[in-house]
Image (cartoon, rainbow, N blue to C red):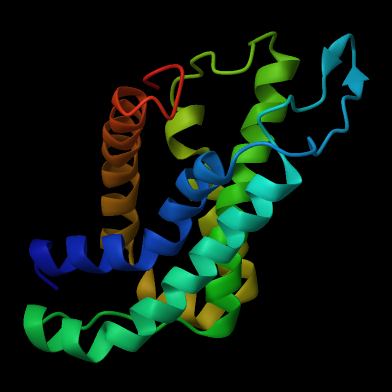
Length: 181
């Protein structure tokens, strides 16, 4: 697979994991997952991690995977790249893993004394992608192995931080986030 095809497969395969956190920000609000509980004098997760945001994020990722499967034949013809079709397990694991990664990062932020919205370099950029990949590897191992070759995984590790920074700056400019990271 050439570099353009590898990038296309990486972006396509990760879209259901990339979108949920953005959808959660748009859905925002509601009851916090941690219900206001503290641990060690700090909130377990904080007000930014809500049941509604998590549910909307996962549903958005699943809906996107269904839509990508629907347009896949046309996309393959247009791009000339063998894009993967999402099995049900991957449709669920990618967005759920993405949201779980973001929740875990919030937990780690609280444990390290960082406030909501505070920068946590590397963790902020890769938390959701790493957990999405791990959960998908467990839920759909054959599909994961066929889709996430070494080249695709390397592209994901390079592409994800770039996309994360760009989308966060855009959300900040649009007043959807209070910080650009």
